[in-house]
Image (cartoon, helix red, strand yellow):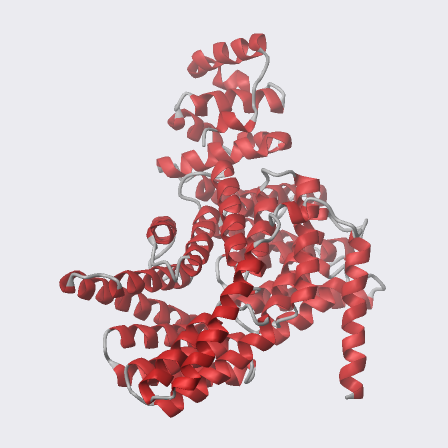
Amino acid sequence: MAAVELEWIPETLYNTAISAVVDNYSRSRRDIRSLPENVQFDVYYKLYQQGRLCQLGGAFCELEVFAKVLRASDKRHLLHHCFQALMDHGVKVASVLSSSFSRRCAYVAVSEEHVKEKAVQFGFILGGFLSDAGWYGDAERVFLACLQLCSLEDEVRHWYRAVECCVRLLHVRNGNCKYHLGEETFKLAESYMEKLAKHGHQANKAALYGELCALLFAKSHYDEAYRWCIEAMRETTVGLLPVRVLVDVLRQASKACVVKREFSKAEQLIKHAVFLAREHFGPKHPKYSDTLLDYGFYLLNVDNICQSVAIYQTALDIRQSVFGGKNIHVATAHEDLAYSSYVHQYSSGKFDNALFHAERAIDIITHILPEDHLLLASSKRVKALILEEIAIDCHNKETEERLLQEAYELHLSSLQLAKNAFGELNVQTAKHHGNLGRLYQSMRKFKEAEEMHIKAIQIKEQLLGQEDYEVALSVGHLASLYNYDMNQYDDAEKLYLRSIAIGKKLFGEGYSGLEYDYRGLIKLYNSVGKFEKVFEYHSVLAGWNRLRDRQFAVADALEDVSTSTQSTEEVVQLFLLSHSHGDTQSCCS
């Protein structure tokens, strides 16, 4: 999408003057720096519009110039466009700026206190922009330089600054999958918090706990993530915290509730986060797209698959309009849309759209990040799942084998990345084992498939309990293997019934995953000659289809979050109240 669509339309006379300056840019580029920040930005934006990226890159790589451009905060969306265009063009402006800032911090380390404070303040702005733009490694370098300056003075106000710096550093390390370093950053922040407490001061912990929740969620430590999201909500003081922090805490708390299957709480939190982001930042802002991705995650997990696809598409459209190009935020939106599209079209077998988005995600990530980056694990996994389904429906044996082999290599790579990052005993690793099990079944390697499914079930049960959604998925896959390929009908029947029981308990009678279990049982009972059971489950399946038809008649998901009947304070208090009641009940049981 062209940046001009972002409603940057100066007055005609003013625009003519800007064009005249740009036409003589080589002679006037030094004089431009004395102009007001907004005028400077418009000159540089005109360079971008004219495709003069080498000249624009030369200017933006100068720290003083970029500092002034950043002050035109009302044109931040347009700045993202310019910046991304430079990165796509091969101008490593993010790296140049972060390196320049790091050198400046080393230089001002021996300067007076107000000089160091000014450098830290600018570092927060620069690092924040780089973080928002998805250049996490460069943002990390900026925040590390800020943290070094903060650590030079052992006084209360510098401890506050250090805590703020740690929160920002933790955020970019989470975004870049540097979870071990993220844990160290959290511990450092806690040490500064303790110093403040000993001197009678208290820093708000909502943002810090929210980022810790995000870290634990990414590592699939769901119980801990849920516990810390509660702590973050307890620290939420509406009116005193920035709206961005409130939105992020609500988002993280919602995701933690989803994986703990606390769906009513998750719904209330994420819907309010979406509403708050749209009201405060507007419908074209990246923060709004962040909330939409988490809203899509909620919808997908409560089996509202069709609506999740629509929400993910909207989030991708926003990110493409803001960033465009080869940007990590665009890649993650492509991946989320790929997976939801795959799930949505699973029964139809129409995977062209899902495959397109999965391949776009992989292309972008491999262009930006190393080949062994953890972010590739999930994108490769999604593409492998899609290729497997395409191969199964393929009538050409040679093409089928080629697609299955490509899927196999993608799954192996994803599994290795997950094991390197999380170890064997992790939900993400278990998912990859399960995916390999399904693929082995398609490749007619049934013993290997059984081994993978059993391993996935054992890990998931140990980490999530006997009746979790993830356990039900793996149980159903093992049932399918026993039923369709290994003729172990008694085992398959028990597993199907277990999967059905979990699905109904979590999602109700209309859960989409029940279809495959019901069809599996119909085939199983046909095979063993239990025809009364065949008729019974044909009737059950017909009832399920009628229920699904009614469930699809739902309101538009975005319309559902266009207003909010509750204030942010009420949403927070209701969540905390429900949690305290849960504590009381569990203690009494």
